[in-house]
Amino acid sequence: MGKVYAILGDIHSNIDALRVVLNDARSQGVTDFVCVGDVVGYNAEPAECIRIVRDELKCPVVRGNHDHYVSYLDTNLADFHPSAAQVVEWTRSQLSERDIKWLHDLPLRRPVMGFMLVHSTLDKPEDWGYVFDNQQAEANFSYQMTPVCFHGHTHVPIVYAHEAHGVVHYEPHDFTIELGQRLFINVGSVGQPRDGDPRASYVIYDVASRQIRFRRLEYDVKTAMMRNRIAGLPERCATRLEIGR
Ligand SMILES: [Fe+2]
Image (cartoon, rainbow, N blue to C red; front, top):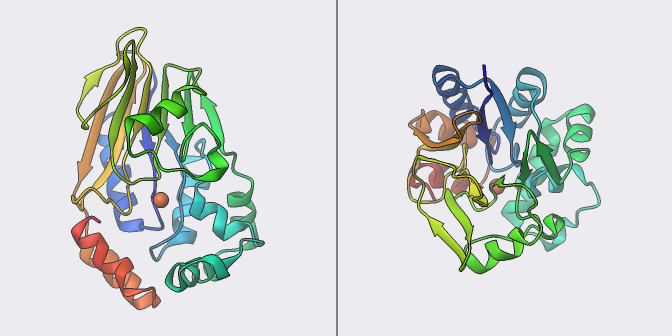
């Protein structure tokens, strides 16, 4: 049987969204998981999300900027917005030394079975640049040697394609990858979508049939918001989940 990957990104400590996504993936015939980073940040269950990704899924993961801020203890939090610094410090307080070392040691880019994973973009991934347009995607393609690379970071699902006349983009839709195509696919965010749709987002990639499917799933947003409030995280971490921004 061929491999069917679920590509998860920007889980951001949202255990309610993650559990719904994992159940859906298993019901959709997924055989393997990969993660494009930002396992932690913003929400209330960082340790449990790390445990699931590291110990249950045991999947290839790349480091996101929030994984980095939490685990590189020389990160200068004085440069951060006070509420962002608060979330980083709170997240650190919830994690074991082993958890922090695991985040710290994640690679910035990672090849998997003929495709690539990166959190932000393959050109200088350590700068955490956002890809919001075709020009920014073009810079990535100069460093992309595989037909497909999956990424996250903006929390907005989208498909960039490198075509003969330049880079174009497509809204999320289900399609079959054609031979010769070069694609840079943003899988959206499991735990904090920002495209105005609060449902959890991830992508399924069936290697044998070359099919890409974008999945959106309702989950218990109210419970996730309540967890954030009980944890004492900034109020915006709760309210933004409801509106998907
Ligand atoms: Fe993120």
